[in-house]
Image 1 (tube, rainbow, N blue to C red):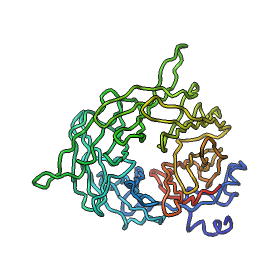
Image 2 (cartoon, one colour; image 1 turned 135 degrees about the horizontal axis):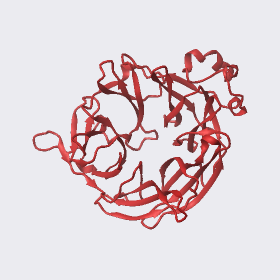
Image 3 (cartoon, rainbow, N blue to C red; image 1 turned 90 degrees about the vertical axis):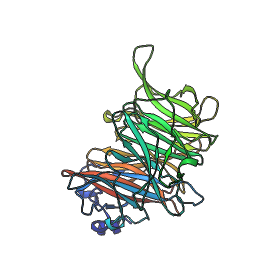
Image 4 (cartoon, rainbow, N blue to C red; image 1 turned 180 degrees about the vertical axis):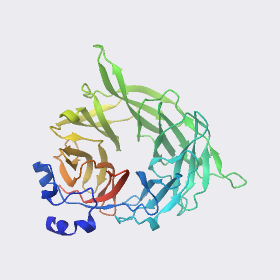
Length: 413
């Protein structure tokens, strides 16, 4: 496999992946053991470039593989803001002619996470639009026609983005800003039309007692009518030191908010980055405790049981990270289980490390690819009947960003 990759590197690899080893600066043995992967730069077409790439996951249905879409935040020569939408089909080339160009109007931006449910074969996307000062709305757009089919009532505040979690009963949306908040839009109203056939105003249920200075992660609940909100809050402890706390709050679609519970987890050294994923009956949490830039950090993983009562830490594991500087962790599922992925920088190069997280155990990391300086992973996802794992990578190329999609394949252990 490695010899084939060396000869075909100009065809199947982007500029962010380094082969062979003599081109590398770092001499860490972990880089010699990293698995070869295939990557390809995303074609920008007629555009100057992209600001970012977001991964959207299709509405959950009975298929084994959820549909995946990529949406590129376009930099146009005119300076106008638009987006390119691409239905992912496993092909790394992502040719520009396969994409739909979307314009969401002034101050419109797509919500990441899951796509709203389809009506027939028509795909939809949820868009956040900041309107007047301290006022926003959510719009539902038809992807093919780029027509607004529904829009929400006004939401207090302006936001920089948001995440969407679909359930059978509606959409839970986490909006990120100086004061992040959560709203719920009932699913039965999502596709409703008034008598004249124009878009209907969607009622919004807000939770005024829940806000955070950073992101709010939304998690599933044992009851379909509820969700769990996880936040990270910095507080002053009794000794006068600032301590990071993970807090969980149960939310009901009718607007009720439960008690706030603190998760009893080690956070004394501070939380550098974190990620959480819903699992049946609860969630799996991963975070970097300490400062990995100076080699004093641990990866902490925990399984949390969530329900009507207070959350329970079922198990936790701490893994010292040693000399590696790490970045934002990501959860990704494959046919071989759930994985926690994050970039590890070793001197001038980096590799993408994946840990398989099972029931009360975490298996040693496997490393994928050797990446040039300045390369970062911005998301991972699985696709296809075999649930092969893909990553979206970003690297600075002169004055613009270069984005690539990489195939890690089936993550075997």
